[in-house]
Length: 108
Image 1 (tube, rainbow, N blue to C red):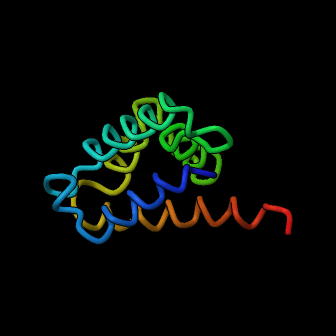
Image 2 (image 1 turned 120 degrees about the vertical axis):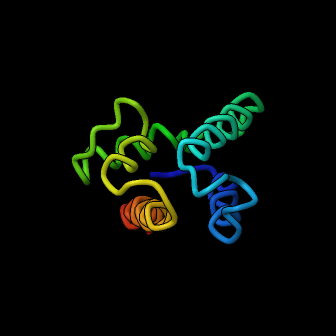
């Protein structure tokens, strides 16, 4: 998974202060924000060689964790882990794994 650096920076900010970006660790709200974020990057031709976060993260969850994301990655995580801060922390850990697996496959 290769999100745009701005998307990664945005997620790092959300991790530090989740209450500023979503109510009660609501991953559905975060998923919508990330969709808009990627849409803005794409509209300004900034995505180029980077993945749309939501699409890439859904694929990662499907192929690596066998989670069906037909209604979105947030719904899949909520079904598996429930609502709340612990699920948000699981999301952050999964994103770290997904992005590190991409960097591990890059040529030196």
